[in-house]
Length: 117
Image 1 (spheres, rainbow, N blue to C red):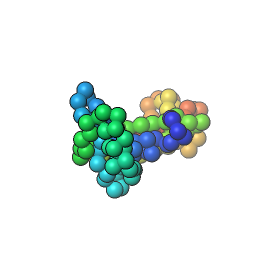
Image 2: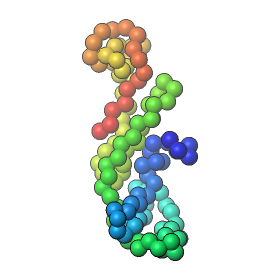
Image 3: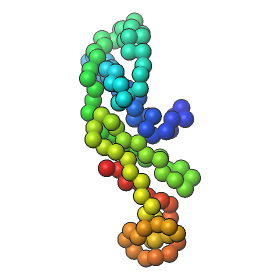
Image 4: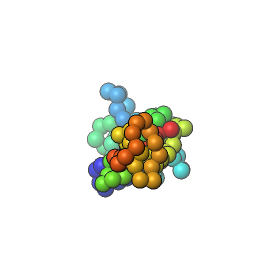
């Protein structure tokens, strides 16, 4: 992921978009998106010829999973009702050390799984 951010930090960034019209900036929502200088960004975009609208936000419902070295790191969008939950299930249908059983045979399993709700 760019800029060394984890999945939750990426999702918490304010949304902005342009659908061949106004450039829409997401309004600040404490506890939902990260604080940013919306006035400064608006002025900078308008100086470049954009027509800027402040919107209540997109109901994106993003979920993101990053596969690391033997772990998965997840994030879910607070703009919707999603959440991230971990499990100790081994991927690949095998029960591994300390893991649960998901699917098939007992034995050495793969990496730990993550479930998005």
